[in-house]
Amino acid sequence: LASRSEQEMDPLGEVPAELQAHGGSLVLPEQEYPRWEVHKFGGASLADAKLYKTCGNLLIEAARANGYAPSIPTLAVVSASYGTTDELINVIRTAERGDLNGANNLLGKVIEKVLGIARDLKVSEDKLKLFQDNLEKDRVDLSAVLCAVKVMKSVPDTAMELMTGMGEVWSAQTMCAYLQMQGFPAEWMDTRKTLYVADGGSHGLGDKGASNMFVKPLMHKTAEAMRMWWLDLSVAKGWVTLQPSSPEESQVQFVGDPKQIEPMVIVTGFIASTTKGVPTTLKRSGSDYTATIVANLCNASRITMWKNVDGIYTADPRKVPDAFPIKTLLYEEAMELAYFGASVLHPSAMAPCIEAEIPVHVRNVFNPLHPGTVIQGSVHDGKSSQDEETIVDNKNLRRSQMLGQGSFGSRMPRKSLSAGEEMMLDEIDKDKLPVKGVTCVENVSLVNLEDAA
Image 1 (cartoon, rainbow, N blue to C red):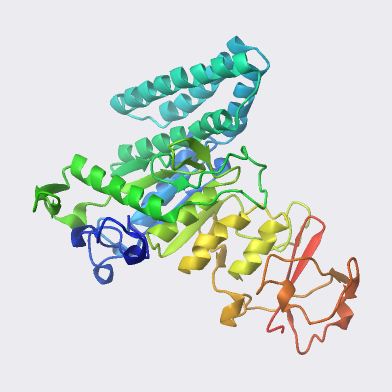
Image 2: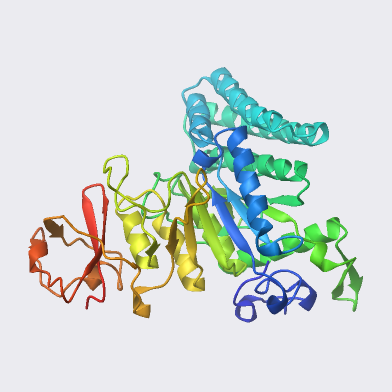
């Protein structure tokens, strides 16, 4: 995997031509082979073995789409199985209260649940034994953390992030094992060894859906680590050999047809490390951020966020029966919806996509035939995100502080409003500024006005 701006950021010299591909990241020239596609599955989509199977089959189908052989280069970012992160929080909080035996018992139940999913997937005995051994090693390490927490009677942020991040590690191994059982080549990437964030003190896990993650990913170091991960994997699998071309350098040589080297990479969401190697996280709801960071670095052609709804809705469908999915949104619009409480995407996750101009598809894992919502384009491009006019029955529109220039707020008619002042919808010239859509989240309505100054 290589960065999109390699010449600017690579202090170790140029990437070997043999390692360039898929937009500068794999093995073949970009014009001769498809670019990477990135998929992301949240915990609600990975609640049990049946859902792991559903998501795994979706990945296989997507990778083999359009007749590519053997497959489209695919990365899948996975969250922990449903409820696992909260269960691990409960484990470490139990130790904090002084109940070490209780904490270890709870940890054992979590691990048994994870192992049970692998058993239900009918993973082969050798793969199950390997997974079980890995789980046992993790249990020993985490038990030592629990013992320290009991003695300290407090939970350092680092201990909390180490504990809660294990759910993603186990989830990636589970998905990888299932894909391998289907005869699909798959490998899993531990982002504690490949995704780096700036040092500067931990802020804990944060809250679910919080608008600020307090995390700055180090794209340079992350790109280099991911590229080296791929090279190490290629050498270990026998796909390439390193032939010394000088005392200081080695030349990469492929063994066999590089077109057949097409493993699917399963990536742990949420977790990362500091430059000092300290385990940390991208905070709650951070797996979306993992997906967009990885997509940016491998110059992906698209990202698909698999959720349990048919895209981004005009309102919460549980509260508004007439709500319907929006076909398209601009990046800024999606960020604002997330900022104001829509739980479909995290606001910080959009930044890497905007920089690389990567479209984000939000689709339903339970209804994969539905096209969902596509997030792409910027208000600065002068494009409207909506294709069809939407009837608006809201009486009032409160102008709220938006995230930045080019947002819904900046597209409103230029009218000076004092704090708390309301602007009646009747004041808008509907002939000149047709309302293309209204999206409502908790206590906020965002109105999209086409071509507003």
